Every structure is written in structure tokens, then in C-alpha cells.
Image 1 (cartoon, one colour):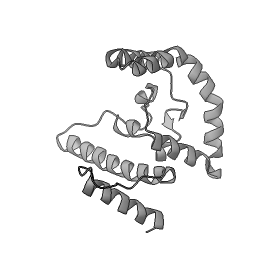
Image 2 (cartoon, one colour):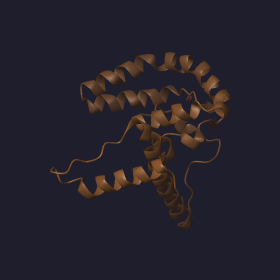
Image 3 (cartoon, rainbow, N blue to C red):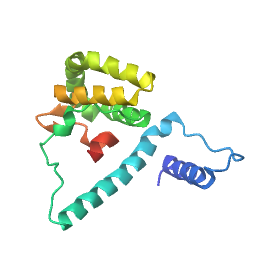
Length: 168
């Protein structure tokens, strides 16, 4: 087990043990820990979604998702800061240069197609107007703009895809 992983376990244990005790100074998760915390978070999500799929199949049905479906890739995902850091760090690896280049080439078009709605969504969120934010998010989905990380129906960052993409 790595030194960072050990430290992270200690931090998470302390957070869990003392979360309700205002007298205890809890450890601070450092920016460099973001990817490791996100990895632990993803492992829990993946276990849950696998259990959900097994339960559904046990009862004679199937989860609607299948390889190549990519219907949820037409949503604009709201992601956590740690997820953004994780994706950015993954894209910086030399073996992922082609994915990064393709994303950077596709992102401006994706953004242009949704710019007006993205601005409306930020305004609704800033105003704490949950109903309006939901309406705008639904409008983004109806536009059907494919995620800039999607290539021919498959996620090019599947290994580090955000939590919302793991649970859709």
C-alpha cells in the first residue's frame, strides 16, 4: 500500500470517527489527494451499480445501458472538483495524448452548441433557483449534444468517467 493511500485511509477514518464532534480538528484533504479520494469514491459507486445490475438481472430484467448506447452522454454532467482533477491528471499521461487532443479539438464545438444554456444554468444555480436549473438542464439534454469525450458511442475516459456517468 502506498504512503499516500495509508495517509488517505487515516484521514478518512478520522473524518468518519469525528464528523459530529465540533471540538476535534479534522484533517484537511490536500489538493494532491483529490485523485486518490475520487478513486475510492468511484470504487464504491462501481460496487453499488454492479449490485444494482445483478439485482435487476436476478429479477428477469436488464439495466437499460449497454455498450455503445451513449444516450446519457448527451447530458451535461455536473462533476465534483476532485473528479475534474482526476480527469485532468489522467489526460496529462502521455499514453492518453490522443484522447486529450481529440477532446480539445471537439470541446469548442460542444461548448458553442450549449453556451446559452450553460450560462442560464449558472445563473439559475447562483440564484438558487432549483426549478429553473432543472428546466435548463433538461433543455441541454433535449439538444442532444454529444459529450466531447464520446467517440463513436464509447467513452474515451471510461476509466476516470465522473460519478454521474457511472450511475446513469
